Length: 215
Length: 215
Image (cartoon, rainbow over all chains, first blue to last red; front, side, top):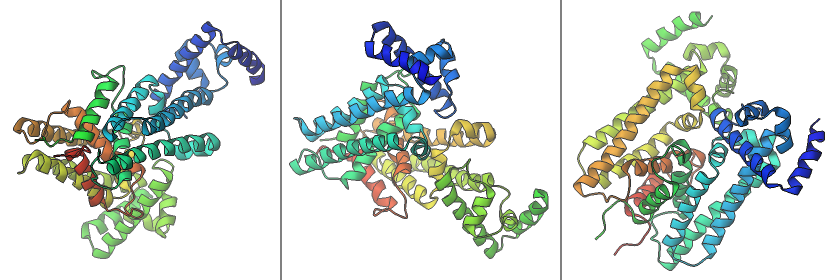
C-alpha cells in the first residue's frame, strides 16, 4: 500500500506545487507538536494525522512515515548548523565575534525548527542508533563537525589573543554546548517572554565577558 | 514473598552492621552501572543481581526493588545539593565566591554519586511522574529550591556590585545549570583525564571571568 502512495507523493514533491508544499509544512509542524508532547517512539501516524486534521491516506500523500517527517527537519537543521559553524570559524572577525555569532545562530535555529531539534536532543540516541543506524551516524558526524568548529574557534582565539585561556578548549566548548543544548528543558519560542536572540545574547555576554564586573 | 524479605531487610538495616552496609553499597553501585547502560525502565532486578554477582534472593535481603535503589541515592544527593546551595547562598563571601563554590560542589556531587544523578537527568520525567508521582514531585520541588538559590546568589551579587548585570538572572542561572547538567553527556569520573574539581573550576573561570581577555 505504501508504494501506491509513494508514486503519487514522489510525483507531487517533484512538481513542488506551492499548495502541496505548504500543506506538507503544516503536517510537519503538527508532527513536531506531537513529538514534543509524546516523544518520537510513542507517536504513531494516526496521532499526527489527528493533530494535522487530515486522514491517514492524505497524510501518506505528503509523507511516507513519522520517521521521514522527523528526519527531514532534523537533517536539514543539523546540516545547516554544522555548515554555518564552519563558515563562522573560517570567516572574518575576532574570537568573541565568532562565538557570539555562533551562540545566537544556534538559539535562532532552535526556535526556527522548534521543537524538532529539542526532540532530537531528548531522544534516546542508543535507541535511535539501533533503529536508524546510518542516519544516526550521519547526525553524530555532523554534531562532531559542529563541536570541532567551536573548539577550533576557541583555540584560534586563544592563539591570536582575542580569547583568554581559562582551561581546556574542549571543556569550554562543551560548557557552551551545555548552556545552549539545555534550553530544550525550558525554552519554547511560543511561551517565552524573551526571544531566541535575547537569550543567545545573554549567554554570549556571560560566556565572553563573565559575571565579575570589569574595570 | 517481598514481605518475607522485607522483615529480614528492615531488621538488618536497623542493626546497621558494617558488612551489611558495605554489601548494600556494592549492590547500589552495581545497579548504577546497569541503570547507566540500559536506562532505568529497561533494567530489572535480575540484571542488577547479575551485575552485583549475587542471586535474586540475596538482593532482596538488601533492597526491595530497583526503584528503591535508584530513589535512595538520588533523594540523598538531590536533598543534599539543594541544602548545600542554600547554605552557600546564606553564607559569607562575594557573589563570585559563592558561584564558584556552588559550581565545583555540583560537579563533585555528580562524580561522588556517579552515575545516579546523570541517570536521573536522563530519565523521562513525564514517565517518572506517572509511575512515582509523589517522589517525582518531591525531587522537582528540591530542584526548584536549588534553582531559587542560584537565582538568589546572582540577584544578591548584582545588588551588592560583586556580579555584573548582563541579562535576566533566571536566564543566567539556567545557562549555568545547562553547563553543569549537560556534563551527563560527556563526563565520567572513571574515564576522564580531568577531575570533577578541574572541570568545575574551568566552568567557574569562564562563567565568572569570561573569555575576553582583561586589562
